[in-house]
Length: 444
Image 1 (cartoon, rainbow, N blue to C red):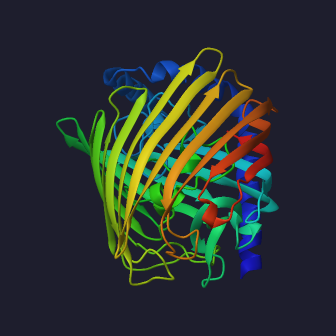
Image 2: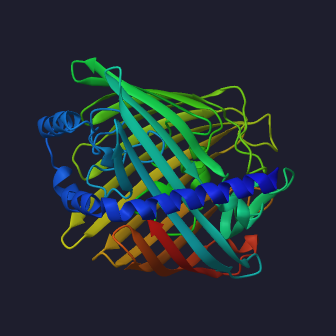
Image 3: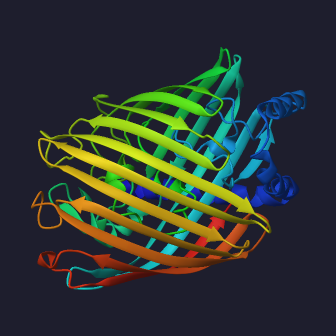
């Protein structure tokens, strides 16, 4: 079964990548136009966007800038139903066919990872994602579909070395510590529908198997300030570990710059079998309020009660609270600035309350160079054995990548990063450092 799924994923990935590359010449002028217009589009009024939508419908196509989840710009959409700043860049190859708007994006990182010290290890691996989206008008509203696949399972069940990281298991019996678990082959298979409710309000319904409930900021691989780094945050299981949830339904109401939404979802984290699709009762809840006061900011506050998230501790639940602010600003010559500041609290039921802080930043001075950084502080209780006592640990990473355009929609990047750590001496890390060197292929 695994061999068949592996072959199917490779064929699907190759087909998506090939279609993106083949579509690029035909769409190059249109895509370049979107790149030139996206800064001014972030400042468009709702009236101007409505006019653009009417013009697009007259031409028999849905406007590529409208979100499938409401009457706002597509640039605002991030992972699941989360929001990012309207001024964020929008990657992907867009094609209109009939009444459908289709969009595709692919990213692959070939990484060599070296984590030093007595608790470290090294490994070469492949990570990334292949994404596809489709939407069209239907019944006075908008129907949408999203799919995202990952090559992570091919790196092996134990994932890759990442000091101070914890979460999930490799074999269903032993917790992963100082390693980042691989994500599942199917990261998102979701459908949505939205329509106007009157009075400037829009209602939306999102369902995924898997999907992402209404909790936290966008998942780390979708945040503009984080997506150029190939490493996962050590705060991942505070902010966005629910981004792959095998069973989620989210209802939302939005109006111009704000949105309120609530989710019912399956609380159990994905198991060690990374190629399958799991099912179960929707036994957990989440709610989130999002507000984009200007095109440059995206703010959110969210709360969730998660039933039995850990397979090794089925009797324990969690409540989590999250606050975050995302910032984005484009500037001349294709450059941009982006940042994330976030806080989260994890209340184990029963157990301790553990907090996490995160700052991410990325500066793109021109279309070639990107410099990025991440600083984290987290209260961990799994580094000295499962629930072996809480310790405050910190990590700082700094890196850069240089992109070489191969075509209008394909880039090859060469990058690296270095990390420094702060942890109590009793944990036995002996002041290690870590680093990664990587090559990235980006389509879209």
